[in-house]
Image 1 (cartoon, one colour):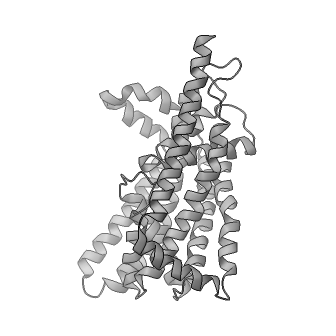
Image 2 (image 1 turned 90 degrees about the vertical axis):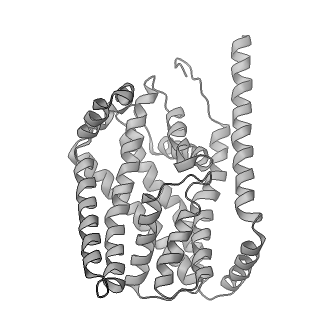
Image 3 (image 1 turned 45 degrees about the vertical axis):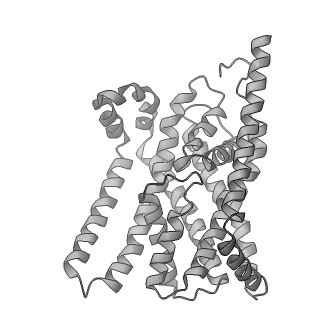
Length: 329
């Protein structure tokens, strides 16, 4: 009884720690940079008076759609471990989102989804989670490479044809390599097994080799659908904040931003905050856009799609049970 009581106390303390740390970092990110926050507040007020303010509502409406696609992916991935409803998958995604919010590179996402499983083979889910994230990365690289190609042709081809051609070949090789890896996940498991220090991870990754090509294709299409939602949200916010470009430039700038954010390692405790903003300001700066408007759109996207859902996900963190009847946590 004492052991069970201690477990409950430790679980309660862990939940409170996650909630407190998440809210603290949220406060730090938004309210402790006075210059940026005040400038951003002015732009927000202007956007609130704009006839295009309905775009903010559209962006907000797409938030559950965005994470709904991620939940559907996790439902399909998790079926290899245990039967899972869409709601259960959605809840696991929200728990993972909250825990990932306070860890570098969203590593807490793994823990959140694993803890939501009822199966005794919880740690085998690590490979399934990795496949889901890799599918999303493949979608980001494929579309982002096309977006960066626009910048290569528009700003580099005439002045630096050799460098531009090299970058094009590099992007093409990267896309090809990632697609080959995605459809040959068994090869990734074999590669891990070949590295002696990593061999003890193989049991947790072996599930990666069980997904068929049709399943991978379905996961990739879901990743592309989620990517399209994210892309539309960013474009809506750019338009709301006064960034005026052609449709091709919008798509190229946003997809290029997502590409750079994904390939640049992040050590921030606040998910990808910072990398995306710098990437967006650079690429849209090449297109002649004001940095503050682009920064405002990027920060708003982060608040709406990452920070706000992470706070909502705390509700599911508080309801999380590490020990279930008949299951060893």
